[in-house]
Image (tube, rainbow, N blue to C red; front, side, top):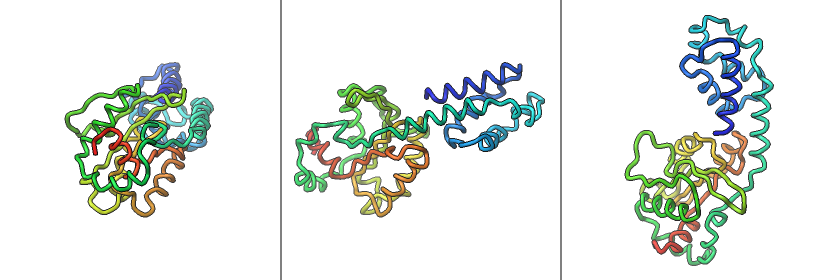
Length: 249
């Protein structure tokens, strides 16, 4: 969110300095597109700028004039900072968030995976309550999902080994996964939505093992947006360890 504000401030300052009107929050819309697409050079930024023609019509200015003095370098500097920061994010596992699950052995957890056919909402709630006890922000209880839902656990901050990281979470329960393994088609749209707030990590909780190629595709998605370690995969073994430690199974 800080990066969005920085980019928006640069664009808005450019608009207001020239006494143009920020028609329909043009600066905010362009900033979001910049963060989403991560342009690497001036021509790529230009494509984003001109993709909202209503702004130019309303202000009665030519796109050429607007593009001529646009602060490309300032935008590219921020994007470079984001890229460098993203590259330095360490790979995390569920045990980094909940070290207490080490008390449950792999062998015990493997047997317990047969008990994972429990309501998805129950998994979400115990995860939310456990994160709240760890000091995570924004652990708001939800009674039902709506079309405005971004993730099962929306943007929260958690301190891990002295560093603060931002997270969202996607939880796929046993019954919401129709096949024996979790397919990319069943989870990818939720991963994209969960990345809306540009978190450092997305906690992906699966009650069934990931299918062929799923991990590779998720890693590629993270790499493509500059965050190779974006996905923290909680597979059935990890989930069983977590739920047994919390005395749910």
